Image (tube, rainbow, N blue to C red; front, side, top):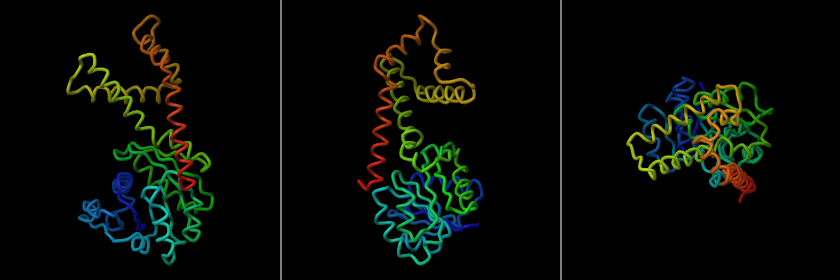
Length: 268
């Protein structure tokens, strides 16, 4: 069983750790944690995980190092880790938006690096994690990282050249869904519907609709046609969404997301 260090123990790190523990891929004794706010690690250290003060201390005793800090913190973290003896032999996993494999690899003495883009539904074991192909990483190491993220949902493997664009599709997109659900709930309340179970009902509708689409074997457009009767209520609702160009708004939002990822990749 490998010793895994987490540099930063925020929501994404918690989701990854939870999946690892549930799957049995690691136990608490093989977790090394460090965070600027040590109290975030308390629930793990109480079960036997090791808490250390600095990223360098964590990396020294780890076989695999997960970089789970914000992109803005990477220059500082990489500078510190670059001075760790043997860092080039550690398996490095990075989950930060906009930070390339080459950036991490160059800073860390040519260490094998796997870049992953997870999303927040990992917290309940229903995440989507996008993993960059890594031909220079040993197959066993790549399989280990893949299994690490499969423990908390599904995995999509793509070329790194597509990574900044996929952020708007799988990583930032839960926020779009939350915004849509919030809009439906607010629209319901504007019509006088204010049940305590309204949010649950809307969430169930979204889950059911997505499951039907995934398993139905037909396109989103075809599913819309099945719901929309000529002269009916859905037709009127879809006419408003079309007039307001909902699809165009989503495309614009996704492009803004990609643009920001490109900026982060360029150090801005």
